[in-house]
Amino acid sequence: MSFTEFPSRLLENAVNEFASLPGVGRKTAFRLVMNLLRRDSEEVKRFGESIIKLHEEIHYCKVCNNISDTEICSICSDEKRDKSIICVVENIQDVMSIENTRQYTGLYHVLGGIISPIDGVGPSDLKIDTLEEKVKAGGIREIIFALSTTMEGDTTNFYLFKRLSKYNPVITTLARGVAIGDELEYTDEITLGRAINNRNPYQQC
Image (cartoon, rainbow, N blue to C red):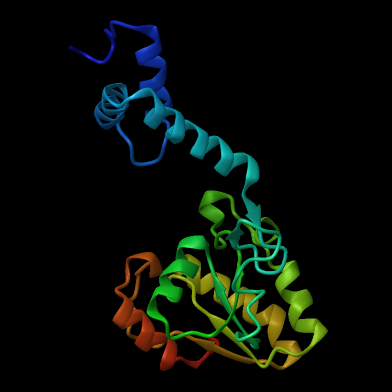
């Protein structure tokens, strides 16, 4: 059966919705939908309700922009965290990757992306103003740049350095354990943990 000849409009609509997700082709979408059809009604209801609740009830932490069930995430509200260190990351996945190393005890700031002119993403599209406000308010002794080691990541690091260095925090980057061009999300925990512990002063290029 070709994917232009669905026996049901409902089936076709469901496949189209799954196929709209990044990285999901129509054949994969079809398999996922057929898997759901084979499950009992309660399982499918739980599946659907979890997605709806995720979309309607999820919060973005007012302090660091991390995803949370509450207005302030568990990391920012943890009194044991070192609030004088901020690790700047691109996205939520990077927070999870660093937390999995169990080597970092400071706070985070999630930018929500990196500067990429080719993709139409500029500084105003990122959570940079709120980061500067934190640093300007004082009490931050170190800022760790933990962005991907790509041209876009380096561009963002340089822009942040120009914005934040006037407040005189120590600015560091991950050690060379993370290879050039790597995304943190796909770096193994041991390598990432060593890169955090052995971070280097940021050097302006």
